[in-house]
Image 1 (cartoon, rainbow, N blue to C red):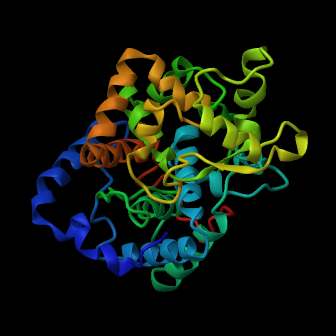
Image 2 (image 1 turned 135 degrees about the vertical axis):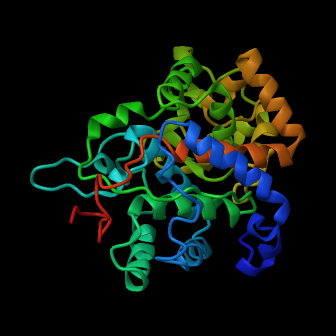
Length: 338
């Protein structure tokens, strides 16, 4: 379950001078990735000095109310970035002239956490009006969601601006759990990410849930055989079949992505893959490739290294396709263009 914010205060990397070297490494990454060096971890130090505290409190409050929200916020950030860059386009609502990506597959009836970002943005606007972008708030919220569920924290370069449009066709860049590993990897690499980032960021599935329709074929009719996926652990199979009976009205039932510690950010996800207990076929597929399977074994043995590299990969992800400088805008309301 959730721990209070104060329970883990001492473990935050901002409190340890030894992490200065790690900060330098992440800053180098931020300049070397797809974006310019206009992003800066101290971007709001003068204009909105309490930003991180406000975001953390907003996320903490939301997760305290519903533990599942941590994974929802992390996923919302990923879907925003991987579609067409970290520009908060996923937060925009439909208008008479624009169809929003939040209301198209794979976000339709799936993406969550919009109200949480709205609440944080409203508080930030009171303290720092027209200063902080929705894209930066969403990026910080993803970090806090990980940290507050037991995971790592990392320094986040800031200074993103918000998009003026939202394009549902960009959603085709979001990896699908029905796709083979080769296709998923191609979508990552098209954004400047690497195979290692695929494995590391897949570790985010250590928290959260999936709707039954996403994996039900593994339970009853794998690859059209009329039988379950033979690689799926037997006890997990029986449990999932009880949660997701072979009938249409179970499609939206929820099953934990990590059945062992579904509300704690840890490295059990990788141990599950070693035990043939990955929920999604796209997750278990990491064990079918020699390179990715060796990474899975590595992270299953060394949780500290998984935590460290998760932060590195998240910084890389958060640099994809950002808008900076005078481009875009700072939305006053994350759902609508000013």
